[in-house]
Image (cartoon, rainbow, N blue to C red):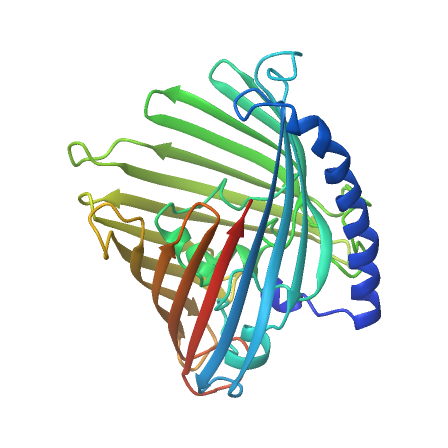
Amino acid sequence: MMKKNLREVQPESKKVFMASCNKVGLMLTLFYGSLATFLSAQTETTKPLHLSVSYIGEGAKNFNGGIKRGSTYLGLVSLKAELNTRMAGWWDGGTLLIEGMNTHGGLPAADLTGDFQGVSNIEAGNHTFLNNLWFAQQIGKINLSAGLQNMDGNFAASEYGSAFINSSFGIPSTFAYNIPSPIFPFTALGLRLEWSLLENLLLKTAVYDGQPDDFESHHYRLNWEISQKEGFLSISEIEWNKSPLKDRNGSYKIGLYFHQSTDSSNIKQKNNGVYLIADQEINQKISAFGQLSVSPKNKNQHYLYAGAGINLKGILTKNSDDLLGFGIAHAALKNFDRKGETAFELTYQYHFNEYFSLQPDLQYILHPAGTGETINNAFVGLLRFYINF
């Protein structure tokens, strides 16, 4: 049974984890602290450097089925600095982004539910690492970025699917399982281009290192490697941002990717896939999304992913930002006696203010396929909170 990227991320020992937090955490603290005095003198609209800190905490409990019953806690810290070259008085259109992350806590999919797609999109084990370090330049209708970066939110992303917690709604699971790809918690050196061809037509294309750095040999993502053996990942996407419904938002994307690398026997390995993403606002309260990703069945055990969902906004009051969502994610698998895994998710987000929000979540996993063995359907509950500064 092929394991996905997140399943390969094993927790380090307590000693290594604490050393990681102490070293990198101290560097990040000093970096952000040294800038606080300078930034305090700047207004929100004119300061060249913007700092942000966010924390996602999550309690997860497997009520029934899966590998075993039980509960765990996991979290994600993000420290981000963004520099605007125009506001710094240098030149127009430039942006430098630096982001450090720390993931900690348990592994609900790996230890409790045994699912293939990943019940939590922040599950990664205990690690501290550099997640993004890139520079982007806007030149007319073209935006070009280069550096350490990931695909999350840039390719194969659904705006309305991003409200859900299951990993497949963020980016189709075919990416995580079929190719070494720079999706959380992995990043890779890459070059990305976005071109606004027309008012509602956007072309995006990128080339990444074919083998994102793992945690085993690159604890903090500070030692970068590019070689012919690691190969490359190329991906292109066309996005049409015009809704067929009058006065409603809509986005439709089609993309394809190609991966090539050399294995330990010096044999070139090639893989590819195609995907479709649709986001459509129905009215002021209701929005829907659909996802489809297909890979060659003769090369991939996980050859098809299909997902869809619907969101209802403003449950409590007319002008409220709270959201109720229901989604279905299906991963088709060959050589699996149950033909695949299906996840059903019911989620609710409530924003107390711009700094704090809460999200209770229920998921039912039909035929969990992450262990390679036949296990019972899993029923899991999660309670997530967000803190942003």
